[in-house]
Amino acid sequence: MSPHTRAMVAAAAHAFMFGKKVAGVHDHASGRDLQIAAEARGERLQGFDGDRQAKFNGTRSELYDAGDKAFVSLEIDGLRAEGYDRQSSSHYTLSVTDQVVQLYDHAVKSWFAFSIQVT
Image 1 (tube, helix red, strand yellow):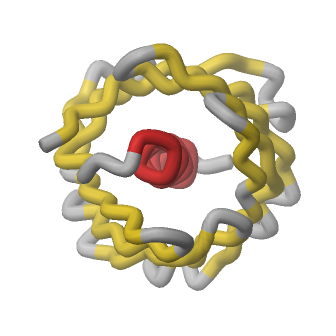
Image 2 (image 1 turned 180 degrees about the vertical axis):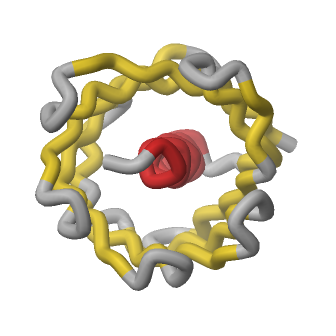
Image 3 (image 1 turned 45 degrees about the vertical axis):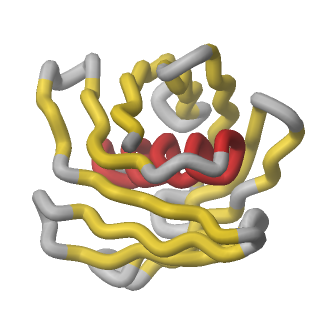
């Protein structure tokens, strides 16, 4: 998965799990604050990646990144989720504790942490 796809998935999963607006994401791997916003209303999600000027949206089962024109599956179970990034042919799993999303990218066999800012 690309770094921006991991951050998008982290924001989307957090928005669905907690029902709060995501106002920003801190990527611990790069040390950067990312301009990613996401809001879930029921089963639908709307989001925007300000760093790429790209919209993303979807449901609790599938996200669409308009910037990459790519789909990512998302299956949420409590505070855990898993899915598949069709663009990179990569599986991922994630878990959430408080304001931190830990995402494991199976393609690169590494964990990535994202702190989520909510409003």
